[in-house]
Length: 200
Image (cartoon, rainbow, N blue to C red; front, side, top):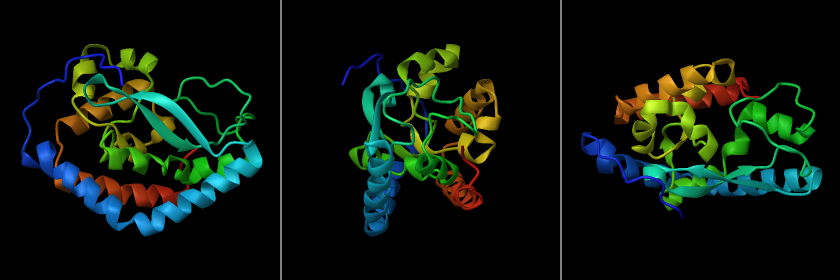
């Protein structure tokens, strides 16, 4: 992995510094009998329709380290991708199976593998490709001080209906209030969004 920046220092409580990782591992491992078979089924559906089951892209992680971010493929294999944060509800590049996955956000489920590896957290800022890091401007180091999250404030506060500037503000807001209570609230709100099929 390429280290782009020195790991930033930030004053946090014991939960953010160590307890958060313990909670991530405990929840992911305990729920493994549920999410592992589900990922296999989702992968199979995408492989049948799109010819590939996974989509893998480099994203920027904690301290600027690049990592492979896993998703279930939702687009046809022979199409170009644009900004990861800009999505159309009627994008012709998205397969029928992929459209259902995006609405339910289940295409993000393989990122649990990244949580296990310590590259991501269950809750945190949205993992971004390197070209998008510049959108955080003077706040890049605050973004890099956190592990990217499978879910976060952006995902439960309007998602793609929000401008990118609002997404940056939500990531910064989360970084200023990392706590067990905040994370559990976001995880519960994420389940609500999955039930509402609010993705796209």
